[in-house]
Image (cartoon, rainbow, N blue to C red; front, top):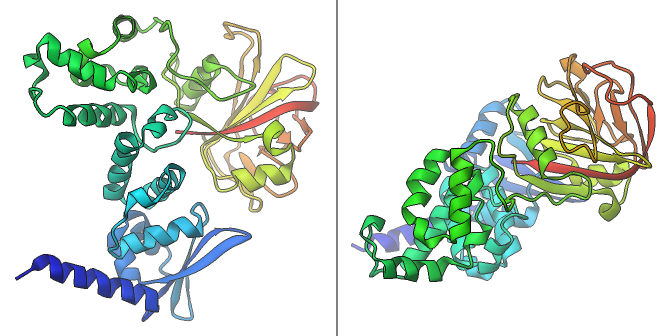
Length: 404
């Protein structure tokens, strides 16, 4: 009995059910206007194939119209969801048919839908098969931890040399040299300082001889001395306003810590000089994104102001509740920053964030409002402190980052 033949037939039948739209009981609205498409599917399949959809369907049991359940997935494009949906119903993905950007979009969607086996497959493919992807890994959100990047790269290198011992303690100098030559072009793009000390000790140190000598000693100092700054920063932030030190401070504030930490990944979503200053462009790009940091350079000054929003931006909905948002200000040329930095946490949770189409990023009851080319800061309403002396300001540049 050929079991594979029966499995192939089952997959074929499931895809036929999807294509024929037979006995569907759920409508999924995917994308944002004007690019929205409705998909018909079957709850029982989605419920057991996607933990995310299982949770959503459990919550939305009462949202039934004409005997159909309706849900929305605004963060995924219809084209990408079509690929994901066919995968859910059993179709194999031929990854070599897609370019790197398409695979990253599929990875984002798979991650949102908690399709863990697909996420792992895509991560491995991107790192191992697409060389150009790893060289840009600091600029692309792969939804993958830095230790996973190291493990994937190391596994790929070892797979190229099956003759090498499985235990690095048994390596000769020539063995390390072979592996070092294979992986040398990947090493500069791995963020070793984002690892925990335990990860560095267990996963990297056994292969220390494949690292450049300067990097190895730099990492030793970094992990042994918490006050040590590496000679070459392995983190960068794609910003025209803030520097690496600011991402450390903001990350510390987000986690409510006293000491500096390795910062979150700051992924640039919106930049006024690139995308156009204005509320419409902000909402077009940033709506439905959560965990964002807004950064503003005040015109004709040394001021940087901004805020952290853990909930989604939207063009509608009014006040949003959160206890974790905050607004802040920096001075550009203040290297230490301990005295000039202002952190103002939310006091009145029920109007911590305001969502509406008439403004850009809005924190509290006027505590910080970005209109487009200008903004306002109230004296103090929903947040603890006033972050600047003058209410009105003009904007030189505005950036919004999503953090991970």
